[in-house]
Image 1: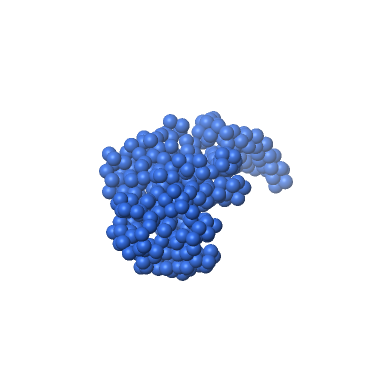
Image 2: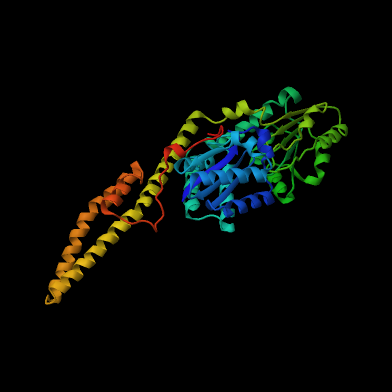
Length: 440
């Protein structure tokens, strides 16, 4: 079985297409049910976030796996395969692992350095485990990817990117509102980006800061950290009517700020503009809200130039080096593990030959005393062990760099080894790491 990933992300598809492929929890569960039921799939995990929907699977055959995952992705998102195909990316075996490591470490994120993706990968894997869909292939890959991501965040400064994005968005508010000091503000959401948003607003010396969330206790905890106040989602329209600057960053898969709610809030407030910074994907704010008089909406599309340069080049380079090192260690371990069936088969065959020859000796020289018989047996085993030691050690070393489809295969042919009952070793044919769409 080999690792395969099929999906779409902000790198291969527009934000509007990603919004259309967003999956509810129920739809996501139905998709994975069908994926694991496919004959080509042994294990599966779905990573569905605001800017990607990716299926990771352990498959026996590349082409059958790609066909099954692509067709099911189209069926369950409701977007035709003809429309999806140009935007679907495919990675296989080592390149699939490379992609997983980059995604988990936020190096493939729209905002390099954002920390939320690490938790999203961990949650996706836990769900796959709870469902019984994750086996040894996914377990090993995901655990190594999580370790690489933790190192990248702990040993570099890429975590500062989220702050950079919020600060850049708020700078765009100044031409609309003037100085933010003394202004009234609302933050919709209570996750990691909301934490950055409330800190930035407090640093800008806003007069009133309200955190609105579906979970009031979470909103209260976040608001308390910055001396603000909390409100339930049912009071959002009321809070908007008193807000000059609004930052919304929920993980909802539906619009949180409909245009009619924003319009009513504007009609019920003193004259003055409202600046809305929408950091969510799918978008929290209905597109038509930008057409309301006095309302300025800035979303991730508008911030894309900032996103592309938000994290320092040195930090990104160091994070990539760390992830590359961890990936190399993972690949080397997997390649070495792929040699194990060959080594085991060789030693089993040698043991069988030794046993057969000792039995033959027993028949030919039945008068040998026990001491002589044991010494002969020990001598034969030592000779065999010494003969096998160098090739078995060397084949493991060579497999780490050359891949297990070369030297181990030669060993199998030379010694006529039978591996029919054993798993095939890992080793990606380079020409199968394809990208049928515009994915990376």
